[in-house]
Amino acid sequence: MNGVEDVGEQLVGVFQNPGLLLGIPLALAGAVFMSLGAQYQHRGVEKVEQLSGDAGTSGLSLDQLKRLLTRPSWLLGTLMLGLAIVCQLAALVQAPLIVVQPLGAIALVITTLLNARISGHSPTRQSLTAIVCCVGGIFLFVFFAAIYATEQSITDRELFVILAILLVVIIILGGCWLVLRHRMRALFYVIGAGILYGFVATLAKVVIKRIEAGQFEWITAICVVALIAAAAVGAYFVQTAYSSGPPDLVIAGLTVVDPLIAVLIGMVILGEAAAAPPWVLVIFGVAGAIAVWGVVGLARYHPQVVSESQEIGITRGSDGGASAPDDTEKPTA
Image 1 (spheres, rainbow, N blue to C red):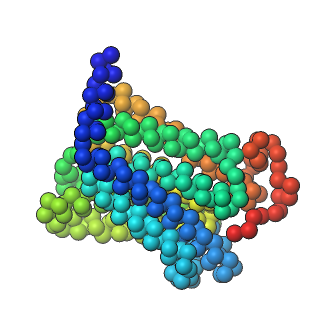
Image 2 (cartoon, helix red, strand yellow; image 1 turned 30 degrees about the vertical axis):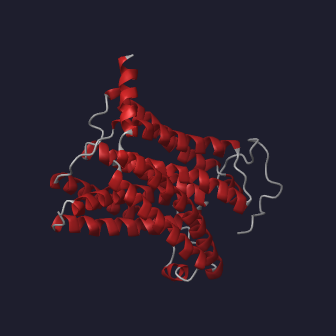
Image 3 (cartoon, one colour; image 1 turned 180 degrees about the vertical axis):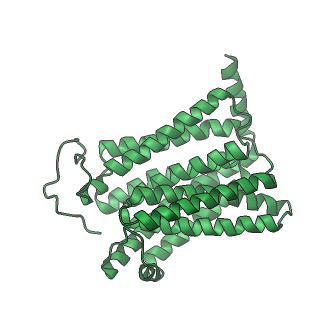
């Protein structure tokens, strides 16, 4: 009973925190812009692939990247994503990192509905289950994070640790891309982008806080450079993922992997979960595992992936056994 009373008192305190009350709506608005931006950018990438006559599944070429800059749909999507970033940064100013980042999962629901309407691929039972796991796992996490998350000042030593880990991550992802890019699927690019964007969100939080405190020194400048580098590589991975899979699969990976990485950094390095009791940490682990399982399930059972790929040995259709009338028939873009 004492544990329940403690949670109740903490929950009441959450609603008395003006930063959270403003940060959470800003994060939700960012999620809406993210879902719209993903849909428009995906459309732009598809058009560029059609015009160039070359699929970008192993990495978009320089010519394809230039063509994207002339596609109205891609530019509109980029504007939407820019607004999503502005909302997210504003939310990070108001609320702890481990509360703001997971709320982007609502973008998955919106993107799924949009993509189903545009592509004509209605969600199957398996894909819906995967989406519920993604969103449910993330929101289970954010519920307890909102109760126990605390802001901590970030030391130079902690920044060095974050920057060093980011450098190792970029080297590993870059090496995998150079060696295995012809065999990579959308899931690799989605996970890679999600990991990098998790570091981007963390570094953005650091830079904002340091600028607010008037501490824009050399290490803050390094953080800005690292942030831009990670965002650029992550953006390239996202665009390539759009050529390899549907937009809601991309958003699923980003809205799960991104917050999980940011949360791990916030918990392990920045100490934002220092006030959480051990049983809450167990819930964090279970919720994260459920969300990741949902991403993997969506990558396997997404109806658009199933209908457009002949290399995935799984059953088709929402009934788990029905097959498409003509396996060679593909929906129009």
